[in-house]
Length: 284
Ligand code: HXC
Image 1 (spheres, rainbow, N blue to C red):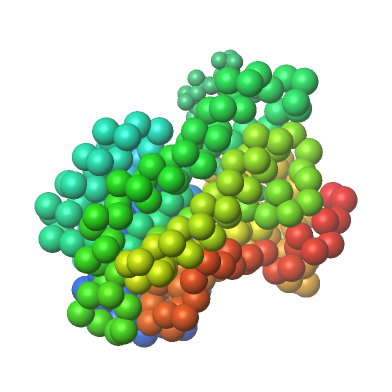
Image 2 (image 1 turned 45 degrees about the vertical axis):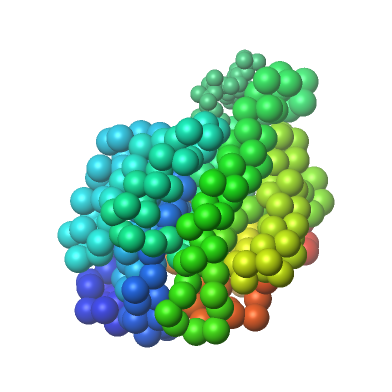
């Protein structure tokens, strides 16, 4: 059993102690879309354990409620806000409620994503559009609606005057992945949005915009959907980083690095956290 530096016992299987001090995000307010489950929930939890207050946005009330209960049980200041990133009015309302509740917004994490396996023969244009609308347009909508709050976020600690955006991406589109034409296109757009906003909002508002591209991460809705259990077990047999399944913890630690003062000179990059897997593109 591992104990976090905040003193909270960590019950997650495979979770490890954080190498960061418990106050690296002290006083920060984060909004995490898709924060009720998987990687988004882990980022929310670790942000909270490192001093941040967290608002999580998602479509399912029940998922939000149990996520918020888990966060609060650790003493983390957390709220759950129902909304769909595809709807501009939901994005605006959730951001406003976050601001009203916590008084500011320093960090926006775009974690909400849609995914399923489908060959192009079986993927209707509407199905393609659906994933683009969640991942790419949803990310842009949240960024666009968050700007007025993030402009003033991040003040009071460190040299940056504006806040931070973190877009959760993937590595599928660096090469090509079977049955993922929709997600590959959507995440390529997300990476492009990351670079464009980093340039424009970094220059104009001191807002840093970065991404994280996770490899295959165990215990996530994405893996449960995309890889059969045998494949996940096969990954786990390996000791070499290249073929090992990552943990949600790995992604959350990258997020803390980028969100903390340690990442103050990092802007417009998408940090690949996959053990180097995409370089080899091995057949499984
Ligand atoms: C083919 C499908 C389909 C499937 C939906 N569609 N599921 N087509 N195969 N399995 C089609 C529908 O037929 C429809 O097209 C269109 O998509 C919209 O479907 P709806 O059900 O109306 O949409 P909606 O209810 O909005 O749901 C969209 C959803 C979403 C994308 C299915 O609910 C979803 O995926 N939620 C899960 C979230 C998730 O898994 N998150 C983790 C992401 S992991 P037609 O033409 O019939 O109207 C991730 C990692 C990527 O992103 C990288 C991994 C390495």
